[in-house]
Length: 547
Image 1: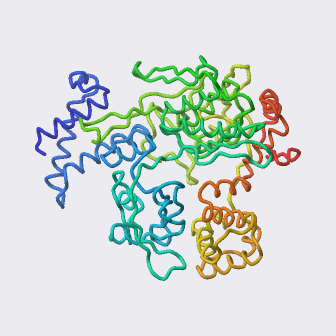
Image 2: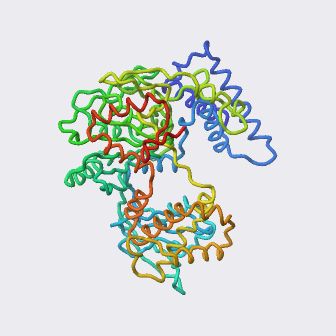
């Protein structure tokens, strides 16, 4: 790359960041753009020509672009060809592959579970299978990302997997024909034991509205007296799907969300166009501190319009709109993902937590962070009164970033010993070994003393260090982990979800609300009554406040 070419590239990058392809629109008199470009080219040329080892100009340019965007916010990113392709896969929700969830187990690529109905599931791939070769090439030392790339491909093409399976002396070969794999937005929907419906919405992709429709159609045939929509750990996704999911419950003509940006073209209002809504039963939306972006749009809209009750913890506060801008004429070329606006709920609340911003941009470094990893002013900010807004019925809701729940639930934290055991994947390993000896799962997944003894022996065999007293105190969590992984091994992901919900205290607390307040007006009244105390409440034991 010669000097003239570098100068042209830099001008193009600056023009893009300024929001236009026309270099003439860059105002040199205001920000010294041209002199700064000249300075940048000097540094780039000196590094390229004089660094102790040869350096690629392309790599230097990529690094410079990424560094520039890091001064803006965590969501403005330069996406190379592979990263842009992964973004397309995430948002469009479909790709060519075989349909398995994989993870690293003992440094080997291992099947967590096949997706029901996919080529891998039909071929007989099982959870716990260790993938030792892909197309006769060893996977030893292969990253998960590289393994996924090798298994994905065009529909109708073949991939050969060599599998080591617990209980088998020799590896097994599988010739699998790839197909289009749909990423599920709704991995589980069903009825809880008390007649409350439950829908897990894990992300927002092009099929979210369709999958939510199907889930509610199934639930409504079972006549639920209330439905929980679980948005915990949902990182968001497509704005269009957030609006469409909110429309499932929002009468026609109501504003769902709006955006405001520096460029007036980013100012948009989104209204519901729904002809029919799911309103025959009360809705509770379950959120936590990792509920973000599109999922905050849905929970904020239903809260502001008094269409559902939000319970859990205050959400993440990611209310920034990203626009994906192609950097070449090729559809598959690199792209710029740039923050261009902010989200606002119908009552006017900005979802973005602006205390993270400094002078209109994110902090450039972590110099203001305290030693415990929290911002130095976190405690001061948490004590500031949050601005108040009004819902459609006049209820008070709070701004300040994120969605503050109507009812705050006690945060469920795993004991440290369980975190360690989960990290070592011993529950998964036990389920794999158990399945070698037993064709059927234990009745109702009830654990016996013999099974617990086997698990303890596995810990010894794996040389897992633990405190016996801590493990005894965490027996409930141990049982939860074993039951969940046995369910996954014998029944797949949906069975694992069903069992995990039986042991999920936050879901139980949310479901208990319908017993105390069986209609939406009564739920809203209950929330107002509970908010007066300004404290978290253990809904499984309402007489016992938790401070």
